[in-house]
Amino acid sequence: MDTALLDLPAPTAARLRRPGWRDPRLLAGIAMVAAAVALGAWAVRTAQATVAVYAVRDTLVPGATVDADDLLVVDVRVPDAALAGYLPADEAVPQDAVLLRTVGAGELLPRAAVGAAVDVAVRPIAVPVDSRPSDEVVPGAVVDVWFTPAAPTGSAARDAEPGAPRLLAAGVTVAEVATPDGAFSAGGSSVVHVLVPQDGLPDLLTALAADGTLVTVPVPGSGR
Image (tube, rainbow, N blue to C red; front, top):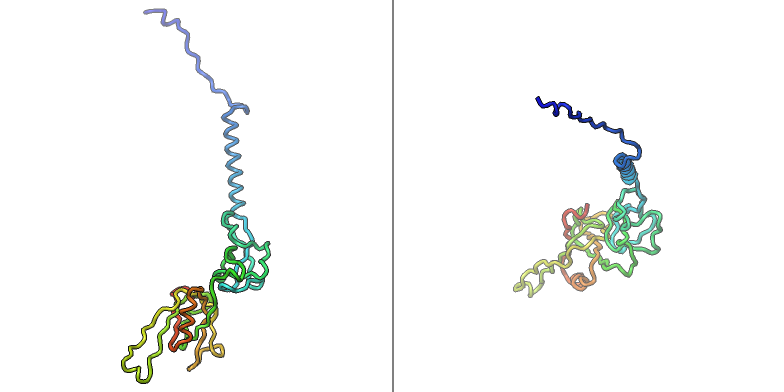
């Protein structure tokens, strides 16, 4: 047997050293834990934070004035990016402000929906209707206005064809509904006030001056 192999020194086992406070790995771990705790606390605070903004009590239509009696103050959780689009409760409503578009009951009041009267792009027109309006024809609802010319009378009635109904105004907003004595009665008529764009006024005004029947047809679901 070769005795030279038996005289080799035995290898020494390496011992693990306990990490000290100055160990970069320990310091990095502590920093990561602290950052995670801080981020979690910030997320919880942000989720619980609310902002007071204005909401509308009842449906308001374009041209309606906006004052304190029309508004509610509600606390909502709105992302900062979207908050700028609404009117906060700590900001006064501009004097003589009117709505430029329809805002539904309970809806938050957008800044873009508030402006001056000269900025309103529609005009109110009173449309008399002989039949009782649908229950969906309420302020804020969207309707189409149709006109049917009256049938010719006298000698001209023999050769004349009955007038076909035609659409006068599509997708206009109802501002108000007035009925005789507050309720529809036989032989009476209701008046539906609609908000018509200015370029649609000539056709509607011409029909109002002519003999015929006007009907407001609600767009399904808009009067809720």
